[in-house]
Image (cartoon, rainbow, N blue to C red; front, side, top):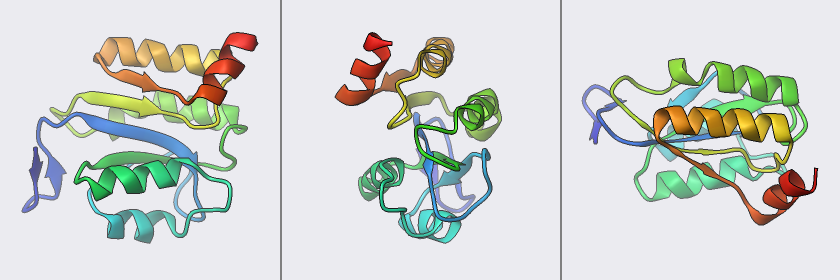
Length: 138
């Protein structure tokens, strides 16, 4: 549930995405409750990004997201680790992790770390078919 007066989520499962963006702080989770906040904070989506497009879809359905910016989607593995390690601080109080999505990431260590976080928070890890295949084939 979202409290518009206080601009915060109250007991609502949060979708968290990690991906590339044109601007904004690196490795810092930002709660976005509107398309305007996402656009103002992260700018126009870079050409090959997937994460921002999924964030836009979620926001279009009225579901706030926590977005972390990394330099290069799917490749900035040390930044992904930093984002995952700071995930607890980025999720609003009293708001469970609903889902975690890291498009273009099929690296074993990152996927396994993400799964551990999802298990602890009773959330789900969302993967596309290409990333799942990369994870299994590694």
